[in-house]
Length: 80
Image (cartoon, helix red, strand yellow):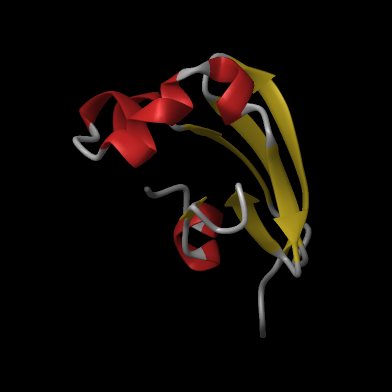
């Protein structure tokens, strides 16, 4: 079965609620990932206005034309 993201909703802080095509729902906190990032292109998403500017495109969660994205299966499993 191919899994895709059907919706992603900003909650607060660096948390996003996901709904997947298999009806699974997860809330994932990206704060540890962002706080521990060394790449300035990633760290810029500590600015919550940038962080909140994600979209779901073709079942993927993306920021700024795939500047930042995560494997769907990892998100489905709640891992970053």
